Image 1 (cartoon, helix red, strand yellow):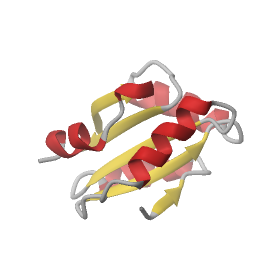
Image 2 (tube, helix red, strand yellow):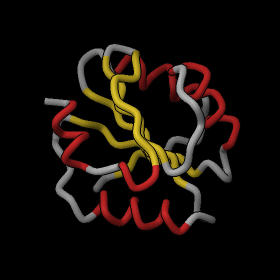
Image 3 (cartoon, helix red, strand yellow):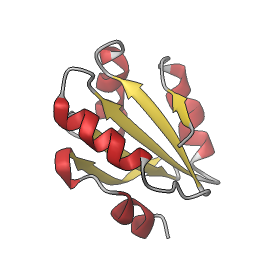
Image 4 (cartoon, helix red, strand yellow):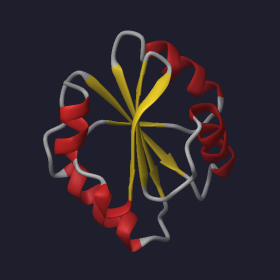
Length: 109
C-alpha cells in the first residue's frame, strides 16, 4: 500500500479536486489505539485497488486536520476511521472493526 501522508489542511482542498476524477480514501489512525493498528495492518495486507488514492492521517499529530475532515465532510470523528471521497463528497464512512477493503472496493466500483 502506498500511503500519501495527510499532514496539512490545504491538502484537503486538493483531495476534493482529485476526487472529481479518482476516488480518494482517508484513513484516520491513532498510534495509541490497538484497534487502529490492527485495522491498518489488515488494510495493508489487502491489495489496494489502483483507482483509489490512499491517504494516511496520524490524528494524534494532526488533530486539527481530523477536525477539519469532520467539518468538511459532515461526519462524526472516530478512530480508526475511513472516508471514501468522490466528487468532493464523502460517499462511504466506516470505523473500528467495520473497516474492510471489500466494502471499500464495492463502494468504489
